[in-house]
Image (cartoon, rainbow, N blue to C red; front, side, top):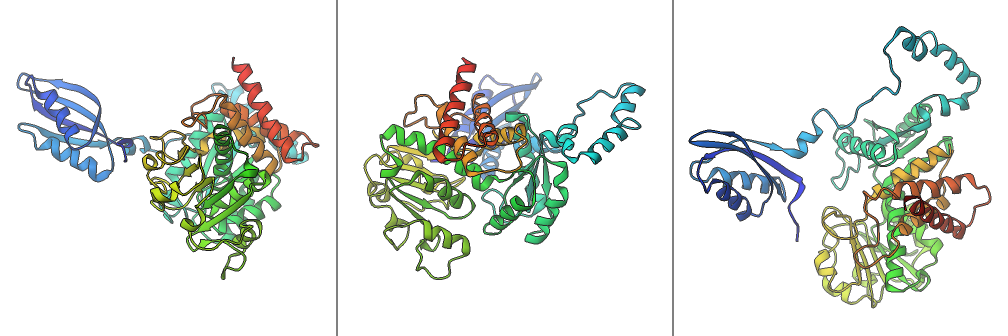
Length: 483
């Protein structure tokens, strides 16, 4: 059951009678319609009345309106205005540019700008690789989108994607000290996107692709990786996959199973699902079943896109057919990155003993997590109001921190596997309610960065096992340093 949260928080300024019961009446009114009051502040007091700000969490915009209407319906109460606290956070944007050098004197200006800057320009012209140390390229990532797959909202376009990209940039800075900037492109033409990013690339040390619809995102990423000499990372694919893999590693530890003995069902084979499958395959599960909106993927299914044809060749060893309900009986693991309310309690009951369910569709999972918890050993979601939140912020800041520190020119599956192991090993003693660290755990980003940097810098670190070992060692090292 959904719980009111800060995503729909409001502050209502109301004028109420100055009576002994006024505060209680207002609080009861909010609670009566399911709101959660988080603050009650007296703004002004008069002999006959008080003006108060009531802050509360709601379930939706309509629920917030219902709370406001309920307050206004009380005797003697007048609602003066209502502020949507989420919109207030976004007024004027969430990020800014701040100079790193002082510009207080004529000498400062001469060194930072003309004439001194000319010498630095000439140095970079003579040695282009010096741009990585003498410009913002050293620590800057472009967060690139075409607005075609914004969150779970669909094709909203470049302008409407800006708040998400700003938020992403803020997270880069907060969790890894990486300077990131939104690059929202007003085109959804594959060739235009690729060429535009290539033209912009000299200013950046890495490219983070975001909210670009599948299957176009696959070609864009692949071709940019070929043409650019900086890492290109599609967070909707690889960020999700890295955190899922880290969480699954700990979940299997808790239930005492090996990946090689497990049958895993992945529901949703878009950007995230395809990347999850790619990173799961080196772990050699007993079988891996991929399911999309048209059912179980197998080589004989007609009309397969090229990306799905690859999935069909790599998965479903037993040639299963049908839909997600046919795929689940006897399965050890369900990973959903698809659509809400697809599964029922009977689907989970029919899975293997000690089943693991990752229902990651947002904001509404593939099934009610509360119901799933009665039938599965471990349940994870993408939500912050349930245990085991699978959140990309555990991955992408540290991954780019490591890539930038290593001055990497690309990104490999070995790096991603190492990152997943590092995330898992931050949790020293996992249990059914705690298989991934908190996004605010300060050891996560350094552990991930260290793992990625070591793989990038070690020429002989080529095998999957080496990558996993590097991730574990990095997490243990960071934990020891913290202690």
